[in-house]
Length: 405
Ligand code: GAL
Image (tube, helix red, strand yellow):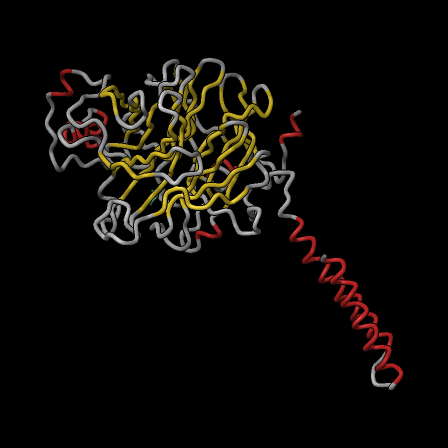
C-alpha cells in the first residue's frame, strides 16, 4: 500500500515537473533531486512503521504495541498462561496518579505486544471508591490460581489525595486473563498477627512516635521492629510489591513495609485473595523497594532497589533457601561502568521474568522513570545471568532470545 502511494506521488510530481519543463517553468534537475528526497522521506516513514515488528529487545528505546502506540504498562509484571505472555502494568501519562488503570498486553514472542485494553479501570463515577480516578495504583502483578481457575491481581494502592500515607495492598479478580478484573478490597496485611521471625522481646517493645529512623539509634529501633508493633493492630504497611508463586502453588506478597525500611513476605491463602497470618520480616532496616523474586535451582533470589523515589540507585540482590527467609544479601547485581552500577543502567527493578533464556539466563525488567512525562518512562529489559550462585545483570544495547539459543 505504502509503495503504491510512493509510486503515485512519484508519477504525480514527475508529470507536474515535465509539464513545468515543457512550459519552461521549473528547473528539471533540481526537481528530480527534490523528488528523490521526497521518496526518501516516505521510505523513512515506511521503515519506522515496519519497526513496530520487533525481533529484539532494545533497552531504554521507545517500544510500541501492535497499533503503533507506546507501550503503557509501568511497574509491571508478566504472567505466562497457555503459551502466551501477558504484561500488566499501570497506565500513566503525567505524574504518578492513575486516571486510566491497569493495562494488559499479550505476546507470543515477548518482542511484539498486542494491546488487550484496560484490565482494571479506575472508577470514574464514585469519588469515594478506593480506586477512584486520581488514586495511585503501582506495581500490579497477576497470578493464576489453579484451584479456583481465577486470575488474581494485587497492586499497591494509595488513596486519592492522601499522598503515600495509606500504604495499602489491593486485590482484584477475573475469570479471563485479560480481564475485566473486579476490585475486591484494599487493606493493610495481617492485622493482629506477628511476623514468624519476631521474638517475644520484640513483641513487648513499645512504639514511640519519635523513633527517628535517620539516626543510628533510630535505625536500631526500626530493626528491632518498633513499626511492626505500631502497626500490629491495624495491619502492616504495604507499598512497592510483587507476587511470587512457588512450585507447590503457594503464593506470596513481597512488599515494602515499616515505612519502606523492611520487606515483608506474606503467605497468601489458597485462593490467593487474602493472607494466612504467616509472614516474615526480611532484611530489617535495609530499605529495599521494587522487589522482584524468582527461583533458580531450588533457591529463591531477589533483586531490589534502594530508596530514592523515581531516581535510579544501585540495585541489591539476595538469596534464600526458603521463600520466607532468612534472606542473605548478595550485593549489587549490576556489572558495568561506574555509572551503570550506580544507577542499575538507569532503571529500577520491577520483575524478573522466569523465562529460561538459556539454562542460567532470565530476563530482568526495569523501569526508567520519567514522572514529568510518563509516556517517556522507558522499559529496560536485560539478560540476567546466574553466575557462581549470584544474579548478575549486564548492559546490552540490543539483544534477543535467539542470541542465547
Ligand atoms: C519509588 C517506588 C515507586 C514509587 C515512588 C514514589 O521509590 O519504587 O514505586 O512508589 O517511589 O515516589
